[in-house]
Length: 302
Image (cartoon, rainbow, N blue to C red):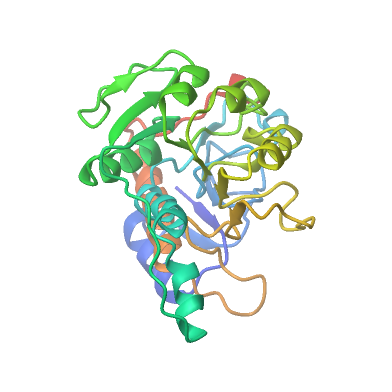
């Protein structure tokens, strides 16, 4: 079975992929390939049977272009550890004031001030997939109480309480972490009602920008200067509109590791390389006649 790898990677990464998938792997788009591993773009052919995305999110895919008989799989779970680390890096930036203290000390000022404390606090995880479960795992290690929201029953020892609505989670949490995929149902679901119910001080978004209603969030930050929006994503990225509220802390969509450059350097980060290899393992399972993971529900996007 021919498999095309439609992503710029270095030679070593390509050889690792070939060891998993087999000698039928080719570099670059190939309409004759039965399976395509892709990031942003794919090329449908008459033989296409499976499209394997290397990203966890698939909201960028135009499902109306894809015939019903072609299987589409996401790479959900491949970035869980890296993204969960980013969540707590953002949280610690606020609670432990590391950057603030560093700049003060570099300026020659030694001044001690109170810092935040996560132990005993309540964190809500909105969207309890692979990333959400890893966030909960880290939170429990820090002695936090975990509230989970998911459309499925949460069966995880790290979740202390599952709630029926995002508003319920917002009312009971000190910190809220958004881990939802962007679908037609979740677009803008973090809006005025949820923000009005939120009793805590920190909201973290490591999902997609448009899960959060832009105008509602900007208004919320303007009214609540003591609260923070920490996000790895922003609306209309990579074009960032300024000014950005002072109580918003941003990173440029690097929680899952930066993608290969668009220039001449094909080297991939360790996180992205491992994600590509995981995608290859899913393709191998499909080629061997086993049920692949993360088959996308088209009705969530069309």
